[in-house]
Length: 244
Ligand code: MN3
Image (cartoon, rainbow, N blue to C red; front, side, top):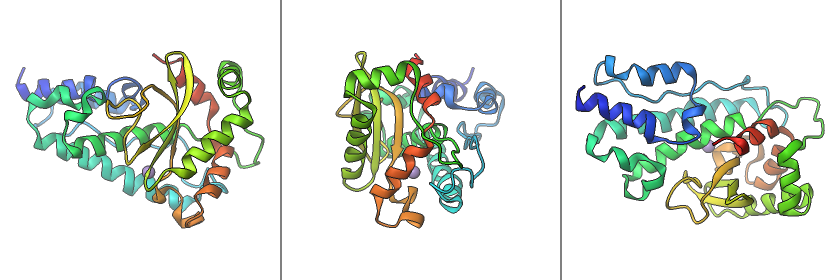
């Protein structure tokens, strides 16, 4: 097996470790499995399709924002990640893991985080055209009440923390040592990274970069967040909570 092939295999298996490996499509997993058989110019990461149409999150997130966010922004993270990987040598493979991301190139940190975070974000939303009340149920609802007193208290804290992020970043619900916590990260960092102030398993993620809301909401980030609660995919959040 060539070093190059081994390198790409390791990126696929270890690179964006943990949940990321479960997020990729079968097609992408096959692509990763088959990398060794492809030419060395093949790159491992591809843009995952959205689990709904671009207009499906209306009226809360508009079609144009979703289309640009997915096909331009997320695509750019994928392209730049592949480029950064291509520009590196195989000896840096271990440093591609989020657990040691502080040692990696800024291009790997920003674009690897960008690809991972957006892959998660798309799945954590679902259409709610009739604007039905949208709440967690089951175990996650129980734990939110245990750790934040009530769902409303949880929402309030999450909304406040995401509104206050200075500049671009993400707000997260994470599981940390059996407890749920709300934390924020700058740029495309995430709580799986060694650089994160609070580390844990992502359960819920909200993108508060301006590109996520500016066309519809302009500078009104708080309105975007208020509306986003309508389209949170709580089943997916629950599944993430129970995932290894
Ligand atoms: Mn984004």
